[in-house]
Image 1 (spheres, protein in one colour):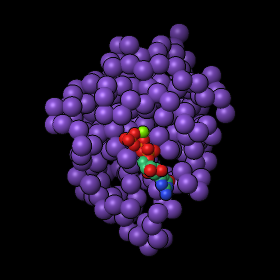
Image 2: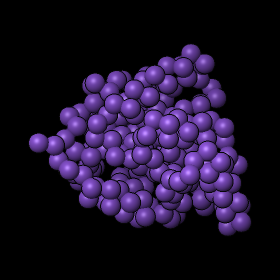
Image 3: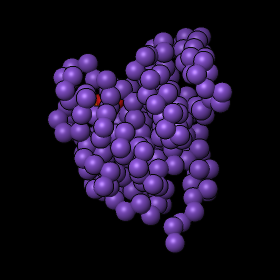
Length: 199
Ligand code: GTP
Ligand code: MG
C-alpha cells in the first residue's frame, strides 16, 4: 500500500479536491486512531508525523494507493482540553462531515474495553440524524477477554438499536495483533467500488 500525507486543513473548504472517494476516521482521543491508521497503511508513524496534539484542530488528509483519501479527524472528548477547544471541534467537524461531497463512510472508533460511552452514542446519533454513512470500528480488542469484548460490543450495538432500526456495519480490530485490519480494508474496497467519478 502506498500512503502519502497530503495536507492538513481547518475547514472543509480547504480540503484537497473531492475527485476521489474519502473515508473519515474519528473517535475519542486515545481511542487508538493513529495506531489504526498506521496498522492499516503498514507505515509506522504515518499518522503521527502530522499530528499536533491538543493544539490546532486539523483534518489531515492521506492519499492511499493514488485511489482514495483517508481523513484523520481530531479526537473528540479529550478530558484534558478546555471546554472551549472542545466546542470549537463541533462546528468545524460537523460542517466537514455534512458538506464534504466525496465522503463515503465515517468510521467511528470505539474502545472495545469500555461500556457504551455517552459521547460516542451522541455522535453516532448525530451522524444518523444527518444521514452521514457510518461504520463502527472497535479498537484495542487484544486488551480484553473474549467475553468482555463480546459484552461491550453487544451493549454498544444494543444501545444504538434503541434509536435506530438499522445497525451500522462494525469491525473489531487490534492494531497490536493486526486483527480485523484486513476486514476494514476489504470494507473500504467494497465501498470504493460504488464510487462514481464526477464528470
Ligand atoms: P490521540 O491522537 O491522542 O487522540 O490518540 P489516538 O486515538 O490517535 O490513539 P493512539 O493511536 O495514539 O493510541 C493511544 C494509546 O493506545 C497508545 O498508547 C497506543 O499504543 C495504544 N493502542 C492503540 N491501539 C492499540 C491496540 O490495538 N492494542 C493495544 N494494546 N494498545 C493500543
Ligand atoms: Mg492520534
